[in-house]
Image (cartoon, rainbow, N blue to C red):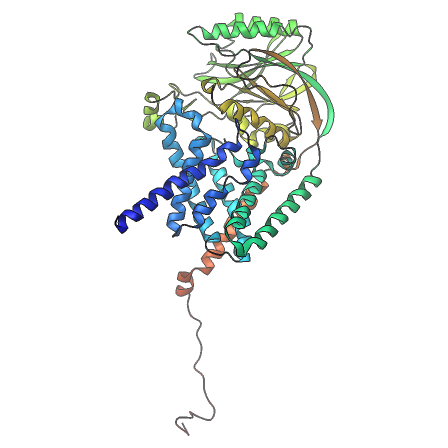
Amino acid sequence: MSMTGDRFASRRWRGAAALLAGALPMFAFPAPSLWWFAYVALVPWILLIRSAPTGRRAAYDGWLGGLGFMLAVHHWLLPSLHVFTVVIAALLGALWAPWGWLVRRFLAGVPTPGRLAGALVVLPSGWLMVELVRSWQGLGGPWGLLGSSQWQVEPALRLASVGGVWLLSFLVVVLNVALAVLVSVRESRIPALAGVLATAAAASAAWVWSPRPDADGGVRIAVVQPGVVDGADSGERRFAREEALTRQLAGRKPDLIVWGESSVGFDLADRPDLAGRLTALSRLTGADILVNVDARRSDRPGIYKSSVLVGPGGPTGDRYDKMRLVPFGEYIPARSLLGWATSVGKAAGEDRRNGSEQVVMDVGHGLRVGPMVCFESAFPDMSRRLAGDGAEVLVAQSSTSSFQHSWAPAQHASLAALRAAETGRPVLHATLTGVSAVHGPSGERVGSRLGTGSSGSAVYEVPLARGVTPYVRFGDWPVHAALLVLASLGVTECLRSPRLRRTAPRPRVRPARTVHGSPARPGH
């Protein structure tokens, strides 16, 4: 084989290896939920990138690994978006190209203790920037953040109350970087081990210092999950099943009853008969009912997804219109350019309209709840704002029925644990078809989940808490710290640039004069 062929084969192997290495973290997320795997999942990817012959190749390995990561974590989108899933993954995978360059910059060869110390700060900061950019709602939102894989680990949830999911992502990347050096560079093992111990000490100190939520009584909240209802008249039949399941709650004295996303397919102003049936259910059970209306509104143009509260006297007037819509699922960005996506998958045929502000609702029995709809529970800032506005319980109404037999329902439900731990407020995740779940103020699970095979109702004894977590108080400080780290690195690299030094003006030095003349020419 020629030298050119050898080089092509090597590039092909590296590309395949980068794709597979980037996909490995998928096993840390639900459904497998191998949370411990997150601490080693990036090691093969880091080892591959640090061996890249050039910075350009390292960036390419970073991009391919990012493509593999996005495809693996979002593989359940393939039946809906088909080839468009690969296109989106390829575009977002490019965000990891600069991270790949940074990995080689700090870990290539035998890194000095200074370079290794820098890597333990810069590489996690670079990873946070990738997560921050792709968390923009227009790019799909913060689904699959590395730190969210720790949703069932009590010490990690405690740290989430300090710095949110961002702090968890940072720490997970720190450990992966240190382990990569430990297994690959014998000369740097002591500094790498010191970095691991320092990280463990800092995390332990934050864990001990972080305040626990103060218990403040509890409430009884019921979830109604109708299960899969298909067919042309599915809207009417789903409502009838939800109605029957809600009747079973009579005598169980719930403080609030929650239906899932799109649980009502008709505008209640246009269907007073449905509004009347909901009112009767509220009177029968003695609790307000929070439904989710997915319909064209009668008072303004367009289709909205809205959390609507109905009490014993009818609709209370409390309404929250979903603000952050799912790209392609609920609207198509730049429809005039990308509208062809409707022909290759289950993209939205008509754009939904979005609301303008979050709402905290006062429900019966003096309870204040903050509703979110669908993947809004993935956004840490939304739950943080609701908690800051006085919500005592966060309610996420969801429907993952399009992805019923995939990992998506379990992934979505797991986000409730992170949001609860971050805010110190219980989170109730209510769905049409599962998984429905409740998590307490520390992120702990409350009661049993309603899985994707369940059709029924359940009442949960939800503990309440008071106080403000450091994350609610100080916000996304790990992201701000990462920005500062990368800005400082940029300034340092510019100052060290040979081009900058070469173009700098040389200082003027006056020629030296001798008093006694030149030794070569005495007297002159």
